[in-house]
Image 1: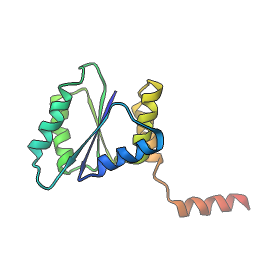
Image 2 (image 1 turned 180 degrees about the horizontal axis):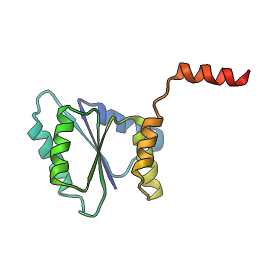
Image 3 (image 1 turned 90 degrees about the vertical axis):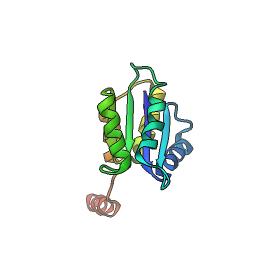
Length: 136
C-alpha cells in the first residue's frame, strides 16, 4: 500500500514530517508539492514517474489538500489513466497517522482511513460544553 500526498506548497511534506515525528517513519508514503514555478504537467510527470515504479497489484491512495485545485486536477487525470488509484481530498494529520498505523499492521481499510480523517475534526468548545453538561 502506498500513500501519495499532493498539495499546494509544502503542506503535504510538512504533514508527513509531523506524522513521522509522532509515530516514526511511515513506509510507503511520498509527497509532492506544487510550487509557483511548476505547471500541472510537471507535477503530473513527477507523480507518473513514481507510479511506474509501483507494482500494478499494489494499492495506491492519493491524498489531496483540496478538491478543485491543480493537484486535484492532476490526480483526476491520473485516476482516469490508473483506475487502481483511490483519490481523497482534505488530507489531515489523523489520516496520515492512520495510514502509518495501517502500514504497521499490514492491513488496509480505506473506510477506517477516512473515518480517522473526518473524526479528527472536532469543535473543541462544543465538546467541552457537552462534556461539562454530562458531569452535572
